[in-house]
Structures are given as C-alpha cells and as structure tokens.
Picture 1 (spheres, helix red, strand yellow):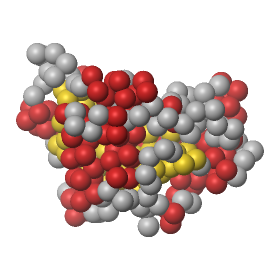
Picture 2 (cartoon, one colour):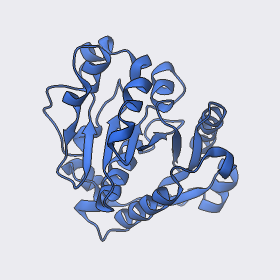
Picture 3 (cartoon, one colour):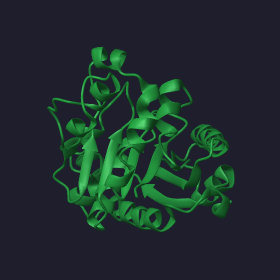
Picture 4 (tube, helix red, strand yellow):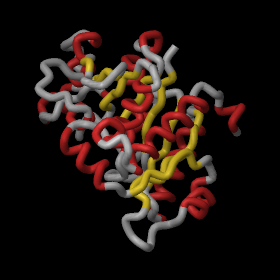
Length: 245
C-alpha cells in the first residue's frame, strides 16, 4: 500500500515542486514505484520539472468529471516514476473541483509504494484539499524567519487534522550569509530536520532541463542531499503520528 505524502509549505516559492521531483526520482532509483501528483491546481508545473509536457489528459480533467484517472497518469523517463500532471490553462482551473482530490488520490493507494503530492502554499480551500489528500506530510521551508513560522503554522494545522508530520526540509540553504542555521531552524519548527538542501546551481539547471538534479548532476551537493532525504523518508514513512509524537 502506498505511503501518501503531502509536500507542503506556508509560503510560495520555497521549492516544493523541486523537492517533489527530486525526491520522486531518488525514491524511484531505490526501487520504489512512485507517483508524483501536481496538486497545485492553479499553478501546475510539476510535469515540466519531470520532463513531461504536451499531455492530453490532466488531473483537472479528472476533477471536472471529464476523464478517467488512469488516462491522466504518465510514465516519466526516470525509473519507476510516474506523474499525474495538472493543466496550465485557466479554463481547466475553473472546471476542476478541488474537493474531489482526496478521494481521487486515495483511490490509487494500492498501485504505488509512494504517492507524493506537490501542494499549493497556504491554507486556502485548494491548498487544504491537496494537503489533506495525504496521510503524512513533509514541510518545506527556506532559512528565513517568516517562512519558518508560516510553515510551522501549516504543520500545526495538519497535525490537528490527523496527518503525521515526518519532519521538515531546510531548502536553498546558503543563499545569503543571513540564513538561519539548521539548529536554530529546528528550534523554531519543533519537528525533526530531515535534510538541508543547499543552494546549488545544479538544481536550478536541472529544473530548466526537465531533469531533476539527482539525475542531471548526481555528484552535486544538492543531488546528494536529496538522496539522503529519500533515505530518511523511506525509513520514516508509514510511522503513525502517535508513535512519532
């Protein structure tokens, strides 16, 4: 049975899509069958980061009741990794009903080892529908106090809603000399720090090429950090919240 994990944050621009793509490919290389879901129904771009474009059927068509779910799932060029993409045009956004997302995602539970949901930021209806489609959550934050506190608040809400918070990822660390260090960030977040992802040109370059860094430049520091994250997630996922906290 799949471990369904929501990738979440309190602010936009923290790198959730990049984390979702790289974590998916890293888990795939570990032999896990992975489905990456673009749960950001208004700003979908996960499929592009995974090198899948020009798709005919999307998650939006499924949520609008106009397509079958299996027709919206595509193989990627990466071992064991599939993607459920979103549409990029406003017409599809208007037709899709985000309230159906949890039921759609959980219907796939028996088909994969991991289902990773790239969620919108914040606590609006579309974001909550995506986040609550998961059973566990990974928090993604940047090393800035406003980002840390906003993401912490999202984690508190999700924990109250019954999700197991696996921990947080400190993403894009080292951009500036004013970055909050990992130990201080963990004090703010009050959940385990699973990985520190450095600011690394290889990650940006791979994103532009549609090849996540773990495949684009596997020897880069960013790629190594994502592999370590995948190992941590593989160990932790499936543990119930009451066991962790």
